[in-house]
Length: 113
Length: 114
Image 1 (cartoon, rainbow over the protein chains, first blue to last red):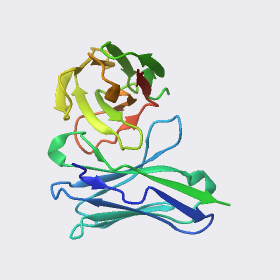
Image 2: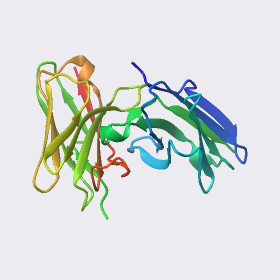
Image 3: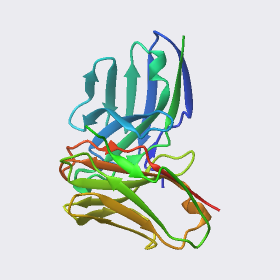
C-alpha cells in the first residue's frame, strides 16, 4: 500500500515562476517529512525536511508546508531555475522506525527558460 | 570527501542467479540503509544496519539479505533472482541511528535480470 502519494507525475514551470509540488500521506504516525531531489544517474539528494511539530520550514528558495489535519505537504520553489529540473521525491517516516523512509513515486519537474 | 560509493554500477544477471551489491558509506558514518527503486516508483526500504546490527527490515522476501562489516561498509545479497528484482538498488549512509539524521544516498547499482 502506498502510504505516501505524489499524484502529479510531472510539472512544467517557467523560469522565475513558483513551482509547487504536492504530497499526501495516509499514515498518521508519520512525524518527519523530507524532500529529496534526483538527477538522472545520481542518487537522491536531500533538499529540505520538516518535523510534524512545525507547519513551515524555509531554506533559501525552498519552503515546505505541512498540513497535518489534511495529511498534506507541499514544496514551494521560488524563483524556479532551470537547474531545478529533476525528479522530486516526498518521503515520510515514524520516529520509532529509524531510517525507514516511505517514498512517494516522485514528480518530474521541468523548468523552462 | 568521497560520498557514498556503490559497486558495481550496472550488472546483468539471469533468473535464478545470485547477486552481491557493495556499498561504502561516507567516512565516519556508521549506519547504512538499502533501498530498491523499481522503474517509475519511489525507493522502497529494504534494510538498515547500524554498528553491524540489523536495525530494520522492509517487506522483502528472505531471498534478500545484507550485512555490515567492521569498517561500516555493507553488502546486499539477493538469491534466486526473479525478473521483478530488476531495479536500481540504492545505498544510503548516515552518522547515527536516530531519526534526526539525514540519509546521504549513493548513485546506485542498476540490476537487470533476464
